[in-house]
Image (tube, rainbow over all chains, first blue to last red; front, side, top):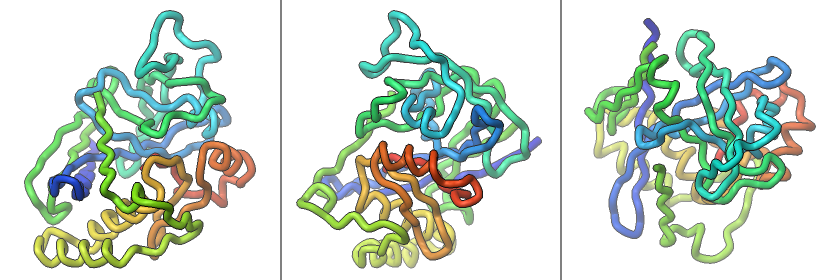
Length: 148
Length: 107
């Protein structure tokens, strides 16, 4: 078994004074040429399918389908349904294959609110993701626990 | 579904800020706030966690809502390209050995 604890990150909103938390998991992604590129994904249990901008995927030379899926739109953008060949940075070098929707035109820059999201489908059957909000020596705000 | 919070009271949204490249200077208010938080949350607020937070807040201070290629260095966060076109060009033109640990971020 391989296990990783990722500190939950925090920021304070000036407008409300609230401290908000999140976890980014860094994946190393296999490119079309067999090289590896690192990219952070926001872990989001409310997201059904892992997504990333098609523009970023093309910039990193990740393999993506040529044509979008007909009649499928997500956040108002066209969808290319593909796969990420990934390792989890900080864990053993096991290579995972995660389904991913590449959003938007690969040659049109993504909207400002774009972000890579790690969703549930095809992910949690391969790695266990759990949030532990107890303060520890790893992080005052808790950790994301990742296990294989 | 992910909801991105835009806090328009951040300095980023209150008039133009410099867009430094390379190693970003840490704004004094960020350094002070992190020092206060670290003192208040001992022993669990480690130096590593302080650096993680300082890098994130500094990147967000200058570049929230933009695409950047950047990496964390011992001295802070280093920005190598800003904006979609520049980031794509950076990846196309920079040899892999010169961009180790570089990541595309959307702070």
